[in-house]
Image (tube, rainbow, N blue to C red; front, side, top):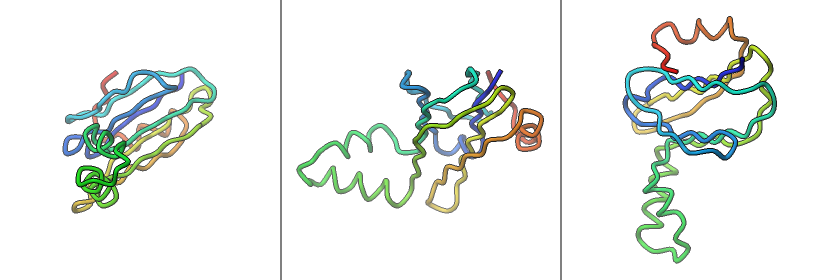
Amino acid sequence: MSKIIVYGDINIFPLYIKIDGGKEVAVSGKYAKSFTVSAGTHHVFATTVSKIERIGNRFSDGGFLSNLSAAVQDSTNTTLSGEIDIGEDEVLLIAVEQKGLKTNVYSKLVFANEANSYLEAYKVVE
């Protein structure tokens, strides 16, 4: 079975993830989080932009809340979004890394047996 694993500095800032248009889940805390998915193409949305910031970005009047939200998002957060083909026994790793005030989100597709080397310092919660 294929998996998506979120790990890294999620104890500092949560990662919000949505897989195939399902319910958005906030991943935070000390331990990595694992999601089991079927092999095939999946749409993955992962961001450190908070829901409040995203709601602020919906305002199109260019007001203070919209401008503040856009500035915060541009300076401190990262978003990944797109289609990815995950094969049987493959793992999509999504890492959150805090560098100063900037939160970066990285992804890498690896075979299941390689994933353990990336997660030595993290316990995975299903």
